[in-house]
Image 1: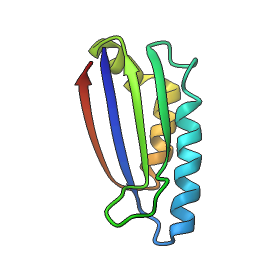
Image 2: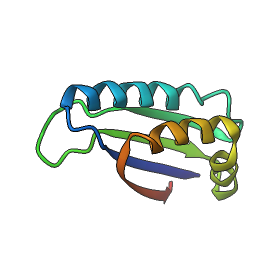
Image 3: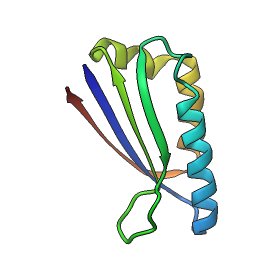
Amino acid sequence: MIRHIVAFKLAADDAGTRAAQAAEAGRRLEALVGVVPTLRAMSAGANALDLPGNWDLALVADFDGAAGLDAYQVHPAHEEVAAFIGGIRSDRVAVDLEV
């Protein structure tokens, strides 16, 4: 199984705007469960603690293997969410673990 972990920094200067955008992005990401066939599980959401150095949004998604992650990346529903996040983020970091 592949666990896909991603964190985002959002571009908005205002903390309230970043929090609202992160919450909306998390909602859109979690809505992909049951829509993208290769997505086995996902947890996504806004940062809960406003501590220095924390990023604004994270997701943890599970796939049966690399092919499932590849299919997720090009699925139209994921591409739509990725476009939304691409318009509000300033940075992204990801790690894919075998679990």
